Image (cartoon, rainbow, N blue to C red; front, side, top):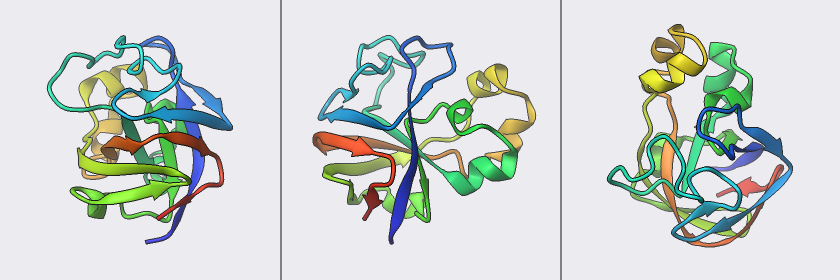
Length: 144
């Protein structure tokens, strides 16, 4: 598995389109500094399970014709089998993560984008991960 970070997104407010950033600070047990989930203000904050970081494959985003930020995942990667990372540790640049579970698309995403996104991202909605060792993530970082 070798891939690359194509884009990084932070949404300060739950329903706003995330901002694209060149780099972000990842904090274990919290997420990306400045993001709604870091602050406990995400739509799904307080739900069971960790939401330190969410990833999605650029290939899936391309196929459904979304702008990367509209997918509402923190990190868009290219060349990575995200399904294969469930239960495994991996690195994004200097940051160590653990793949927790797949992140299927939800009705909330469809409401913020368009209804056909649910069908288009079925089985490719991304990955939820825990940050086990924080640091900086930057566009262009290797995913290994």
